[in-house]
Length: 260
Image 1: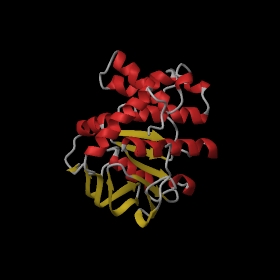
Image 2 (image 1 turned 60 degrees about the vertical axis):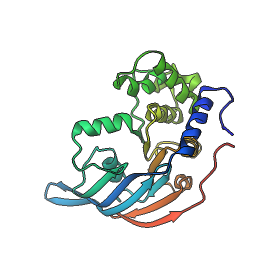
Image 3 (image 1 turned 90 degrees about the horizontal axis):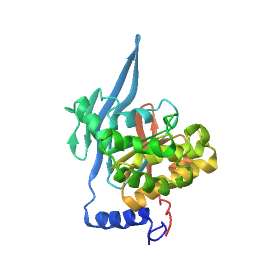
Image 4 (image 1 turned 180 degrees about the horizontal axis):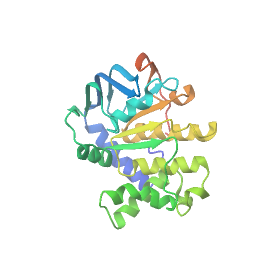
């Protein structure tokens, strides 16, 4: 049963996506093979990641947890192509990224990856709806299809009533919901969530994590979450603890179920 109101746009998208998910074989979306990332700052050498090997399959909700400086954000930056490995090899959907150009990465971020930042990064002069539409406009999309897609995701994150408000008129939790809608409006296969609850109180943080869980459960999107929060990580299918740039332990768990 769809958790969304019968007949709503989101419910219709849900039904279509459920049919797709049921007929496709699960694939590996993200693969790290002995990936290291080393930074040089002045005379110092800083290891961001140290020989990390990990696979994340389609439809997985994977959390990476650990203290600041352990390599969590570095890992996400590599998946997004915002940084490049010093050694080792990274694969997206089985394709090696070693020869990706900057244009290739721009296309990947535009079409396949959605990023949710801790600091929201909404455009101050735009309304909530305009912020959400922005990724579609960058892709060259125009007209009624953009408006329809924006309305779908604003409904999904319960922000329809605030569509005409600018970021300064929204609470922190509302801004993060808009940021999430912007990250998923282009229907990415991979969602990267970098401390998305870090600037929120516990209630609003829990709501954002449940929304991430619903994307995995109902649309089979792959979510990589980095967090300090044990409570946030509890929504994931499995959790990797990180320390000093390495994956230390993996804990599988019974994930939360959203809706009915």
